[in-house]
Amino acid sequence: MIDPAASEVSVDRLVEVVTERTGEDRDSVRRSLDPVTDDGTVTAAAFESTVTDVSQILATAETRVDLATRAHEDATAAATDAPDLDVVEVRRRAFGARLDDLRAEVEALGDDLAAARADPESPMDVYRAAVDLHEVTTGAQDVVRVAHDLETELEAFEAWLSSANRRHDGLVDEVEAAEESAESLAETVDRLRAAEAPDPERRFDASVQARVLDLVVADLRAEAEDLRAWAERDGVDFPDGVDARLDELDAEVAAHGAALSDGTDWDDRFGERLDALDTELAAVEPPVAWARVDETVAEARSALSGDGGAPADRARQ
Image 1 (cartoon, one colour):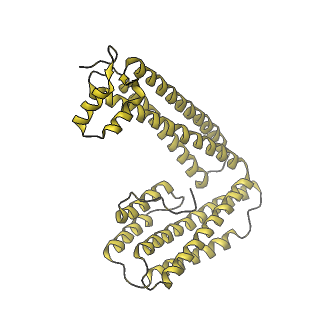
Image 2 (cartoon, rainbow, N blue to C red):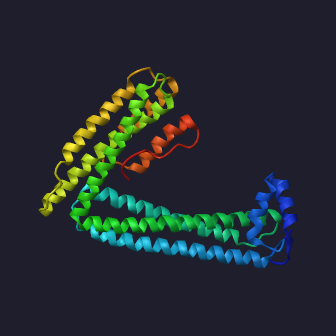
Image 3 (cartoon, rainbow, N blue to C red):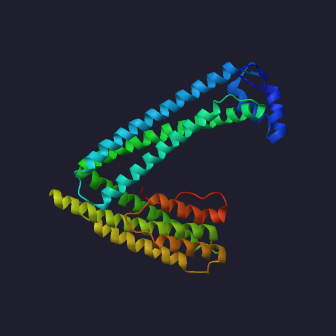
């Protein structure tokens, strides 16, 4: 048994043992051991120094989550003055779920760090601990980034709650983004219809985009209805022309979808995926849980590409 807390261990020896047992690349194993290595030797001092560094990074992640928690508390308090509308509640729930995920991630990373810092007794223990320390570092850095973004979004949500202008400007921005997506889809549809042999995968992807845009329009209509009711309650003006723009966008998206359905029949691998996607999306009602829609669309795309898919090309979050 090898106990780095009591003796120094040659990194060459550790690399040899680990590669023999795992078949992993020697350079990769050596890179994993670098943080706990000092001048070609894995030492207790280097190991503890790395543990200390990782602990500090994790502490930073915990602090960022605490700051996001305070921002969530402030936004939740501000939401108590808002009317009981889906446009408010769906945002509040989504923020709460994201914060819960961050808290769970920090707790899991703390458990992983505790397991990694336990005294390793064998070459494989040393290697696994080094890998775990790297993964905790990466995970904690991700938490810092995500928690910072969440805090910023929560502050924006609080401002959105307190300002009709912000709410209305945000809605108009979302309508414009949807219109731009529809224009991009129109260009794709025109290219496909002009081609002698349209690319079936590009046609499939455009058909998926049309379905997502259709859902975007329904979601925007529901949001506009809630925001109009909120404006009437507070006695403020609601933006002109929103309904007309959504009607036009609805018709445009429907026309694109019809154009994509015309022509040669889908072969089974495309047709079955579109049918399954239609079934999934038919069950979605505003206010839309876009994270779930992203997953559904990614599954449809990845079933063809095998690359894990891409997020839904939508104009909303």
